[in-house]
Length: 226
Image 1 (cartoon, rainbow, N blue to C red):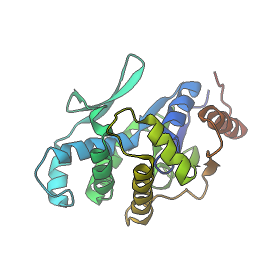
Image 2 (spheres, rainbow, N blue to C red):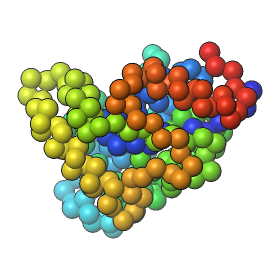
Image 3 (spheres, rainbow, N blue to C red):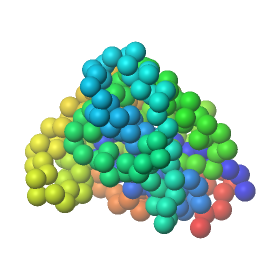
Image 4 (cartoon, rainbow, N blue to C red):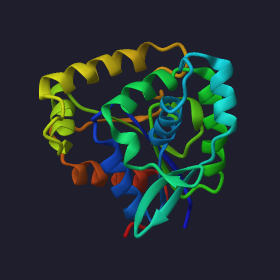
């Protein structure tokens, strides 16, 4: 059976993580959340005392970090220098800092090498914001998943469990700011690859999106879906 490298890009709250995990399960592939790698660097920066825009300090920090995904009890967790940081990187503070960190070329260059190695053997679904445009421009098939701003904010709000979580309006404002940062940054701005299959998930369930993606993959390749 042909082994593929699949990329799924899109803005915050579009449903990339859920869809990417489900698609990888259906294909029997590995799932790589590249945004988690940037959050891992952001977490390390938050524990330091330097300016996150200090490229020299960032380069030294990145050189000291070992980031890896490990499958534990059917769940993929992110390890930073051997410690499980999967839950620590999902706070609003790390989310905001990761947007700043991800715009620094020195960080992107360091993580690019890690991602390229992860994709070398294919049979993998990569989720991110520049997977199909920068990291894997020759990916076998690329998807760009989007949804309306209100839908994306509502999805994020529904995921919140803490009583001190931001309001729906605050989440929508944060996503709007993140969209602007990601789309306007000089390095690897958020945009669909020219050959990406664009999907608006505003009125689609995660499973409907996955079925659509599987149909697109079957149109192009000889695969056996489970």
